[in-house]
Length: 68
Image 1 (cartoon, rainbow, N blue to C red):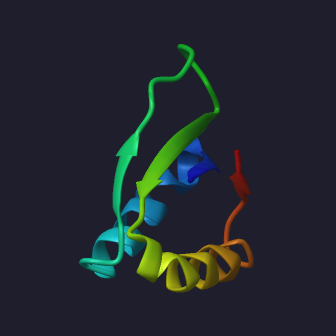
Image 2 (cartoon, rainbow, N blue to C red; image 1 turned 180 degrees about the vertical axis):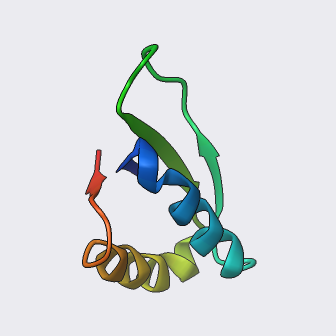
């Protein structure tokens, strides 16, 4: 799963994902220079997918977050 987040919200997203230790691993994908967004790839175990989807839906109420 790849999430697109505004550059200014990326640190918040990283902190939230890190706080749910063991739920998902993530990495930031390469982006065009001066892009106003970050694409973050989530690596999710199949049995944890429902929990990750719930977290993503909740985060969408707090920050701009798009599934790419």
